[in-house]
Image (cartoon, rainbow, N blue to C red; front, side):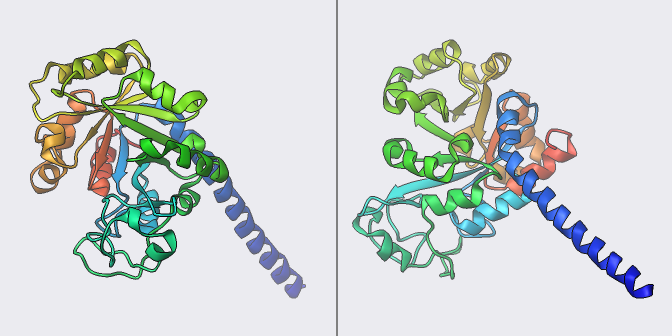
Length: 305
């Protein structure tokens, strides 16, 4: 009888494990739609990890993406470059020198040659990590986090088949810098509505007023602003865009993106001076080099789940 009881307990234990695994798998599959719904309709201040969690992993690496997902960011930003044999890899610079053990331009090397290199960490030291392809990165991100493909607009024709192959079309945000909306629609064609396109507007730049006017007249789910001065009138119009259902994205990375309300100010002095100020202006998407600090601040203030 005792053996039977033990057998039942063992079976129950493993059944619970299986149920938990299945439950977790189901949750992961729903995450993308939940995040997309939050992006379009939600109230959270969204957190974007710039080049992944690069302070604790090589920038634009698989581990940087995994770390960002684990900490609970809403989106990871990654950069794209094209190799000599027309393969898309994760790389911010045109050159290999800063972030890998190689040297020279990315476009002068094949994917196979670049795969023979190693990534460097933030201090410039060689690691055991390799340069990932876009496909490899999207497989890791699939169903778990939204993805901003930066520096990818010009590669759209090459990006599109990979999005289809990996089934990640609904996770992607692509951007264009100070581009007329008609030009963007011509470039993206029928896929304009299939991905989330976000204009980037540098306040104070040539013709920026025209781009702001277009955003107000043509609905976008989100728009990125960068500004060196907080006296530019558009900064005080962010809530107007919010009322139209448009999210406002600002980078907290460096002072020239946000009139001095940046990550290091948050870290060294007070998050209210940086993140708090941005939020007070109507910003509800913040790209950060310190995503863990930003998430902690938002959660403490009831601004992120």
